[in-house]
Length: 161
Ligand SMILES: [Zn+2]
Figure (cartoon, rainbow, N blue to C red):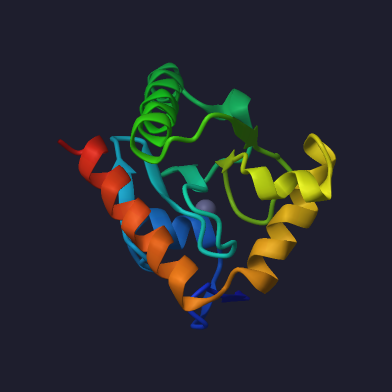
């Protein structure tokens, strides 16, 4: 079991955070943005960045090559729909996508919006980690959290209409 501190300050003990989230055992702040047959999307629970969505498989797998043909299709469609909503609802112009296979929890893609303030930390991929840390440590204030919650609701509304 691992102890994980969520953005709301609560601590949960889970075997796999993605399993806990996709099964509904742990509720992400703001709720689910999109749920399909094989995937589950929610605002990142650790980094306070508006529109940072995590798309996780419901199955506990690690690698892209473990996805079935049906899951592959579901994945691309879900990713595309979320990306479209990020652009249309939140005005997000660019997104960075990350997915790594040596993770402690299972298959999930980070959709990290690119904001102006991130240029302070560099131009491209090298700025991502410091930006996430900055958000985690410095953007954890009430107004920003409220703004993120409102964004989640707008995204969810658009994606589930
Ligand atoms: Zn899992």
